[in-house]
Image (cartoon, rainbow, N blue to C red; front, side, top):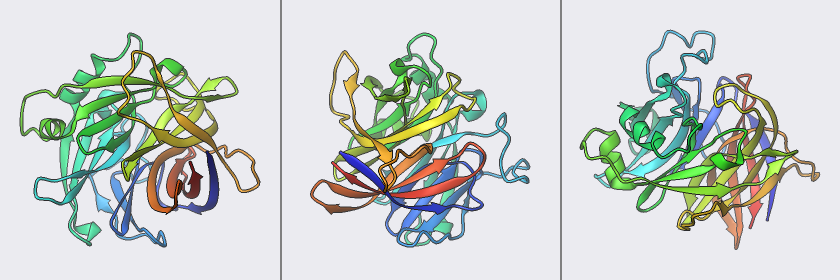
Length: 305
């Protein structure tokens, strides 16, 4: 497996990119300290009119302060009952302020016309916390949707034991978070084994389903705090098999992201979507990164499985 950077694109005025999803001809990106859903042309990555997720007086400096931000880290496309597509943006759950989410009902080919509905995720996150090992803090970093499940990915920084995926039944969970039912969904948990860099374990950071494959990213950060940032050592890209069930952590097929000259990329990848399949076992990915100082980039990558 090999993941090589093709191009890096700066994303000005988009702070702290944390999740990316492509629907039709539009790439949608969220930032963990921004109140907007950013919209781009999928081919040229030209910025369009963003969608306001919520109003705030704390974005005047260009970033919502860490203590106040909803920490939107998860973005995934989900089917609607009407046969369309919506986006689900979820906070990390690491603090009380981060137990919020947004249902974004897309409107055909007019991204800016999307309708936004706020969600309280406290009931769901209470369920998830009950399944965490003692000592771990809920810290969701990625979400993906399969035909029958919403996959929520926990990143427990500083410990290899904290990489797990909550497998939530899709229809029941969407009804629960949208408050269409009070019936709590039955959530399953699977642990995964990831590689590391310089003795520091990688943590899941992004995910997307494409042609029945689950593509994931993982980054390595020198910190044990789910809220505080640490030095970034690099990132991985690969595939995860969500159907495997095991009492032990399941190994994940990952490869370290590299520049065209073969040198390892030291940025922190926060999200992934698949632009297209290039050929058998070859895919063009679009990743988004966060430099922990408000800067963001989009990174085009060729992944060969």
